[in-house]
Image (tube, rainbow, N blue to C red; front, top):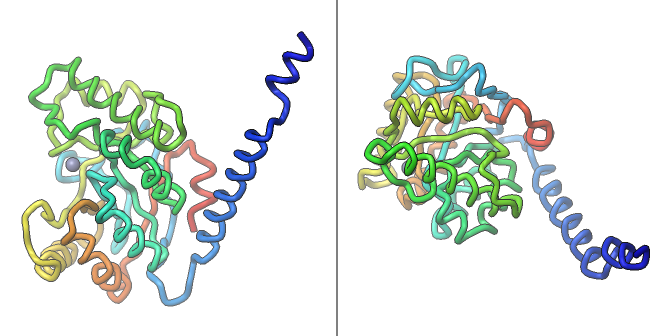
Length: 272
Ligand SMILES: [Zn+2]
């Protein structure tokens, strides 16, 4: 029995190899993070820990409450990824400016592109959840809606950590189309998951050129002065616009706030 036990748990070549791999990935992520902050970039100005007990529902487009942002503070959020054609461009634009964002992922593409999901996390961004297949939960039964939510969380967690748990490591969720029901809102609140709306958006679901989109978004931001901004990383026009938008934020003295879950220590340490 002792021999069997030792054989099962002793360091095998495979275990040693995966330990080395994990260490190499951690080193690589740390090396990337070490490049920020960098002078001449927009940067992330502060970390905001979001506790779902204090902020169960945020975003003025859907709710009365939003996050406690100061004048000229913005939070960048990206929905509907990961999408291999465009998400890497968005990540590159954010990295160029040392900016951290929150990505609300759809479970099905997350399950198809797990390496991209891990890359988003490794680059210091926060990962929230956006259902399994982007169904409109307003027109589903509560059971079907719950299944959409939980399957999405499990797919994102599987891609991130290799465990298909329905308990999200970051308890942030956004409804597709912002279409919610009192029952699904209650369900998420009872599970300690914060529901994110948005304070403003670029309307990037409508086709337009990147420069038209930049003007629309910056005009809206001039009026709102701050807020949670909704963008879509699978949209090519958004990926194309983003570098200019980040430069606009820098030139106009906006400050980017990075959201992390209140319980997370590792994310706070990684964010700069
Ligand atoms: Zn969406």
